[in-house]
Length: 346
Image (cartoon, rainbow, N blue to C red; front, side, top):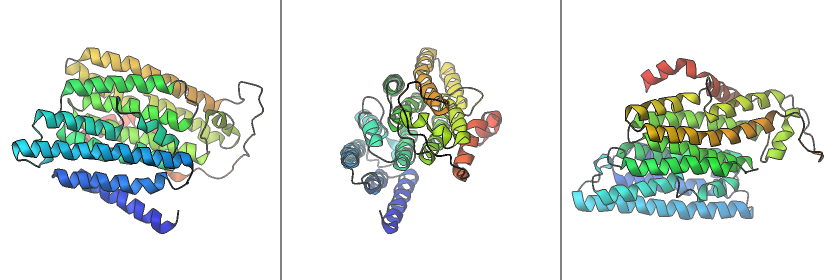
């Protein structure tokens, strides 16, 4: 892919995201979502591999359907109330359609089927964009319309997402698919709290983006697409592998790492809102996620493969670790002690 095409795609992604998150009018938000969808398609399909083309086609069809539903929801609301303002969504049918549309955009259960397949057909860097940047506009729309949406629908979707993300990630051998199910599971945590404390959902999204970026960039620098490859990368970059172990545990939400902060605050807020049962269920379901993060971490730091098949060992790489990876992994591990400052800023 030539540099001009990459530049146009990057600028379009920036424009689309900025347009959606800064607009008050539904048509402008919809336009931003469409620009985003069209800008990411060449990046998904740039390898010209059949899987990449399939991933791009699936992504386009799902996102086009979701964008049509966003437009239909806003038009229905405007028809009944005369309002095109995003925060003035009050018609019950519009609210329900919008919840479905944003669930499709984000990949929440039961509209999650496209996400692991699309991530599997993309490169790790495009997978990172799909898991973080492309979810920012829909999360923003969910944040702006959260007072109008039904908490019961969001809670059901959230618990199903956390359960399914955990269950389906257990038997995967591809790192991109594991991270896709991890993303679905994390989205469940955001969806359950957005009706009660939208700022907390945004904080969760920011910290999730931080940790996921650290994991994706670490995997990209050691070129690990499968668990079997991950088992032998300790010879290539031992220090990065050791840090990847801690980053994965942070993503699982273990204290005293950064990932524990959003889970702790969400459970605390749900208990205050007297939905302790939902808090208990989602906390127990996150143990499923912990299992496959531990599996990934075990594969990353194990010194020998557990069977006798000969694996091709990687050459030891003495190159310094990318600065971005170093900064992101440090933040993924060290932010819990300064949580009062983070909460004061948020």
